[in-house]
Image (cartoon, rainbow, N blue to C red):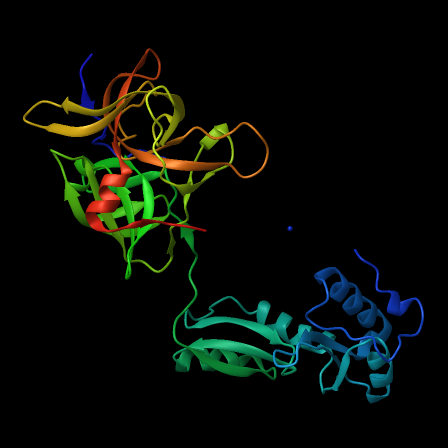
Amino acid sequence: MIRRPLRTMTALAGAAAAVTAFATPASAATVLNEAASPAVLAAAQEKLDGSLGSAFAGSWLDTTTGRLVVGTTDSSASARIRAAGAIPKVVRHSSAELKKIQSTLDNRTAGLPASVAGWYVDAPANEVVVSVVGGDPAGRAWVAAAGVPVRVEQVKSAPRPLWNVIGGQGLYFNGGACSVGFNAYDDDDHYVITAGHCTELGGTVRGVDGTIGNVAKSSFPGNDYGTIKVTHSDVSTPPRVDRYEDGTDVRIEGADVVGVGGKICRSGITTHWQCGRVEALNQTVNYGNGNVVRGLTQTSACAEPGDSGGSYVSRPSSGSGTKLVQAQGMTSGGSGNCDEGGTTFFQPVKEVLNRYDLTLEKD
């Protein structure tokens, strides 16, 4: 069987405690604040909402005192709110009125300018707030045309969807597809680590949901590792590896090396989650055409083209709960396939971490 790097040259598709103060009149010592459990606060808020009816105007924790504040449009309800352990605040608009204003905006999304970043009920201020990027005139005009009382706030940028780069998922270069190894960082930036014979393609790199950034560094042959600098603000780099259909993601907690005979697993976009054992350490591999790589680890976990750069980790335990694993390395190459079985090699991750002074991402 032919040994080869496992980069493929075609893109692959790849969550109650009861509040006893309501059972009987509260004592003067009853205080609802941020020290109470979420369940206690939620029960108190629900009780006051029902008790105040149409006069209820929301509730919130005061960020200075930590006390629970309850808004009301009826000043006569203040004693009732104090008896429950909260601080009353008499305001102009009820919760129902504010929700009606918000609903008016919700029903006007046709032709919504991109500069209108969103809107929400500001309970402490007793207002509906519309966020407009840079105070854009078109955004302000849209707000004015709604004909409802709101406060316009200027924000610096528009929101965007956030997506994760996760070990074993796809990396798409100009001319090839590989897999994510691990996420790491230094003092200034975040990086995706993968195989060097993938990053040698250079340029801009995409992930499953969009652009990640550009190739930062690459080492192949001799070594087989490279990094991609994360430059897009919508990209998150958690310390996780995808197990695909074999279970929930595993979480990286370190990089302790699994020795010969130890159980390991790997993840990649072509053959997903595959497991085996470490067969040899510090192996030199000849991929042909002068491409010799030293210091690789040999395993019995199968892999195929497209899996290159993907994560090798210690085998997770079979128990319940979050699966914690040790990062081992990135898929380099191999022989055979996942139908007939084969031999694979990975580039130990510790070498690239030390070489580029990087630290694996943490929760």
